[in-house]
Image 1: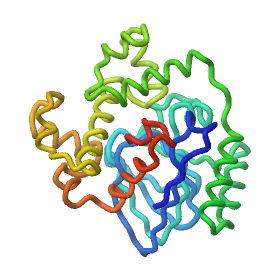
Image 2: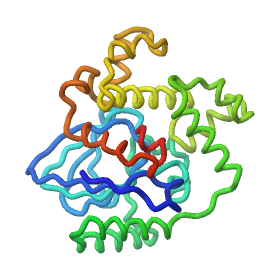
Image 3: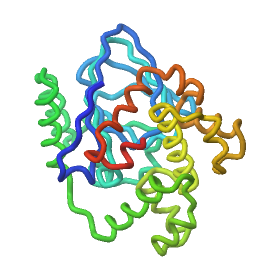
Length: 279
C-alpha cells in the first residue's frame, strides 16, 4: 500500500489516494469503517462482504458509499487497485445523492455515457507503471470532476468535521449549539452528507479515534475504557470490533496487514483532512 496526498486545491474534496497491490493468488482481509471510496480495479477481481452479511462482486470502477462497520474483502487473483478517499464535498460533486442510501453499498461508475470518462481513466491508469505518474494523472482526473459548493454548505461541513474529529465522544447537543440547527435537521443532513444519523456517526468516529490511539500511539486499551465514554470493557470491545473488525487486543498485538497499512495515512499529517487521517 502506498499513499499520496492530494494537491492543495483538492484537499477539501478528497482524502488520500492509494495504490494497493497483492501478488497472492487469494487474499482476504478486513477494512475499517470509512469514508466513501472511488476504486479502479487495475487488475484482479474480488468481492465485498458487508456488516449485514451480504456479498457483492467488486465492479471494475467502484464507488463505495460510506461504510458503517468493518467490511471484509476477498481477492481471487493477484490484484492492483487505485483508490481515492472521498470527503463529503467529494461525495457531493461525484455523486450528489443521499449518502445513507449508499452506506455499505457499491455502485458501478463505469456504466452508460456518464461512465465513459471513468472507463477512459481506468484504461489509461492500466498503461502507467510509475506510481507517481499514476497518482498525478488520477488527481488531474479528479480535479476535472469537482464543482463549487455554496458558502453555507462549506460552513456546515466544517462544523460537522470539527465535531467528529475534536470531540472525544461527540454529543449531538454540541453540534446543535455550534450550527444553530435542530437535532431533526442535523439528522437529515448528516445522513445525506456523511451516510448516518449523528449518534451512529459519533460512535463510528469515536471507535476510529480509539483504534488509532491503540495501534499507532500504543495506548493501553483498558485505560481507554475508563475515560467515561464507554459503559465498560465489554462495550468498548464490541464497538471496536464492529467498526474496525478487530478486537482491541488484536489491534495492539496482531493487527491485520490492511489494518496496519491503513494507519499509515496518519503519516501524511496535515496534507490530508483530519477526517481522513482519523478514518
